[in-house]
Image 1 (cartoon, one colour):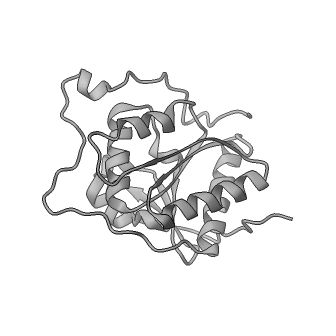
Image 2 (cartoon, rainbow, N blue to C red):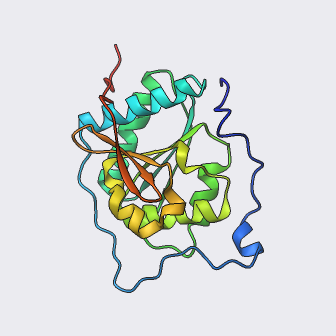
Length: 205
């Protein structure tokens, strides 16, 4: 693996639940009536944009093709998006360190959060419905050394909805693509369109 982003820094792995150890409340969302909707299928433009965005970010950080952790919801479209990314990334010579999934409802989301961060990847790629993603990233932010600024999502994350559910602090810097190949970044004061084009062929050769 090549060098990592000096700006991101290398952080020591957190204890199993540093928030709980400090007496902070659980990050689990408990608003009444929330339910996760199954996302639609990803598009080729979306996959190409995600790969292009991730590739350029890793290149600027001096990380080459990088080593990626992939996470996804358990619904069929999210699994298919993760499958497509892993296939395309490995075809480009990229390394996938781990792949894990999560339910829309769980006691704490600590187990998938731990799996996604255990090997200190260069970046994370996520696919899933906003509610499950929101639960996961709140746990990641609360209990691990995860960095949203090194995280890239499929359109299924629904960035405006995720920002509202998870909270701005939990997702500041997280980048997502949309089905048309445009890309957006979450900031504390809202979402900002990233200048394009972002799309690259997900099928090299």
